Amino acid sequence: MASLLPVMWLGRRLMANKPADLKVVPVLNEVMGLLLALEARWAGQGRRLPFGTSLIAVARRD
Image 1 (cartoon, helix red, strand yellow):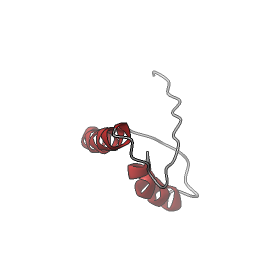
Image 2 (cartoon, one colour; image 1 turned 135 degrees about the vertical axis):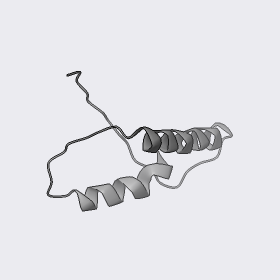
Image 3 (cartoon, helix red, strand yellow; image 1 turned 60 degrees about the horizontal axis):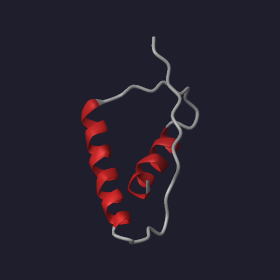
């Protein structure tokens, strides 16, 4: 998830003192999916990424 690190860093800085209220934005979700697909392809070719992040999601159905 190296390609998402700058976005995650900025989001954490902007939302530092706000409660977590997450909503899925379809267009943004597609863009992030494409970035992760490119990263997976890069890693699948045996290339290494110099940095990265981990993401764990917990969801519930309303």
